[in-house]
Image (cartoon, rainbow, N blue to C red):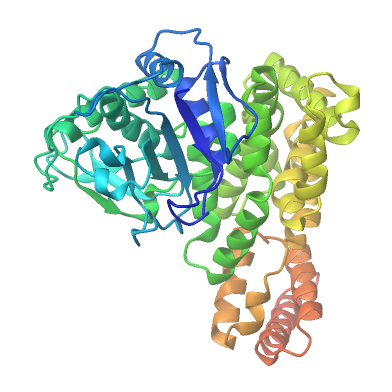
Length: 490
């Protein structure tokens, strides 16, 4: 017995846990198909690991998962397991301690080690916030807190403490963050092993943390994004995750309606994504398929949408932007084949493929495809990219592809799910929110008219909404009259 993920926390804290996210973070740390998890028993699941690589994180996980530790803290040797609590921001320990934006490794209660009095058990508890938004000091920054900590990195940092706890080699601990206590310095050095490994998977240079500085600050800019993209790309700092974050920030910041949209989007997304990641974690071929046949095309779409939100693009420019996503015909053919395989998964279910787990298909049908937010933001864009790629491979030029792209956006964009928040806004804010939507998303007369129609039909009795829409219609009619009288040929 060695390492477990806790399913609920009686006697330790509230049950605000996300064990599926804990397994995902372990999978990212391992980057190894040999990682697994036994069936739940007594409120926890045991981790299993058959190591196939020799990176420092893999070696550390192998030791933590496959070693039966029996440290002697002064009263004889006793078996000590490591229990992981993957918490949500709302996780509170029984002593009242909030774990929001925090992580800790607590020694067994009778060990006498620092922090032991906070542990109600005789096991080593590893507790961390899976939704943390913390920035820390990067090496060479002079103490500037400019480096984000992703959940896998936070978990690995606490595993470093746990490793010394179960080996009874814990170093000195102090309450000072700058300079770091010896124990925190050792954990940061171990943390940098994972940072180096994560960067090498992306072919990038690692940005390391300063071992001499354990200070941190809460900052929403340090949050993570899209756990499925993180899993399939094998890194929370991957290009795919960063591009999703860019798309999110471009369409959200500075607009209350955008925030409300993404609140509901993430509510629906997290209703299935942790379980989906758990089901995919042990299937490397499925993760690769999802990356190539869903995540990458989705990113391509939203990358074009971000650019389109920055400047008005003609049909020809849209077509050229699409073609530029595919550097050569071979790339386009491979992407098209991946899209076809993924389409077979989604449309036909697991019965048509031995690679797609039946439970994953059932989960998606029940919780993902039923959400209008998932359909609009994830499913429809990938189907659109598939249709355009089919046209491109058939020989269509930039102008033809651009027209098809523009027509598809005119049909798709105004069908964005409408948040109830619109009904609570004063008229001035309705105007500013609508102006943002039309600038970033609805750039043609057709799409603007359709969205305004839907907004009016959704809130026919809300004076602020109907008043703004009526005023805009009057202005539009005036613009048309002035343009017609200035140029009678129109």
